Length: 229
Image (tube, rainbow, N blue to C red; front, top):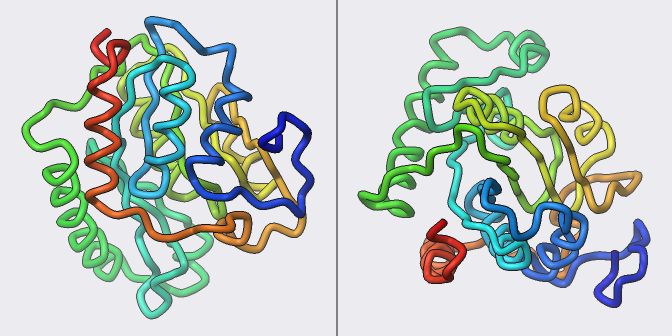
């Protein structure tokens, strides 16, 4: 939907991630003002989106850390992802196509585990991760391309026995949104343009979200009364 409430055409872009979050929140209105809902953002780009959603739903927000596993020699191509809780998801097609050895995979996993631990400390400090058991978890990112990162997050969240897992993004590749529907309870992709190309194409401002912005939005969200439910 556009900022005026009208349907968003495939050739329209979001102004920025905060605007995208407000649009996405309108698609999640059924989950507003509920004690059992928690919004989890995939850092860093998912945090400004999730902040707007959590604010609109009067729900608590936290981060859920996932790291893409880049293919050796083609680091932008995801061969999988890891998430908090020791979850590892591999794209077997990519692994087979590039003939990636287990040793090479382990090297990349070790590197990304270090970054995962760094970000846990940077964003959460000594604060414990939220208890997700029997809660409705809304997983949010700024968009879905291959979906490997979100897939890892969904598997990791599912292991904590929530009541329901919902993936919600402002924009996503149609095929990826469809594939994720098989592993979560609900997928909400506000915009599924064809051809898709890349997430950043659907934002006017797609500047990288900084660690400081992540911490500030987490702090602001925690300062609201609903966050202490």
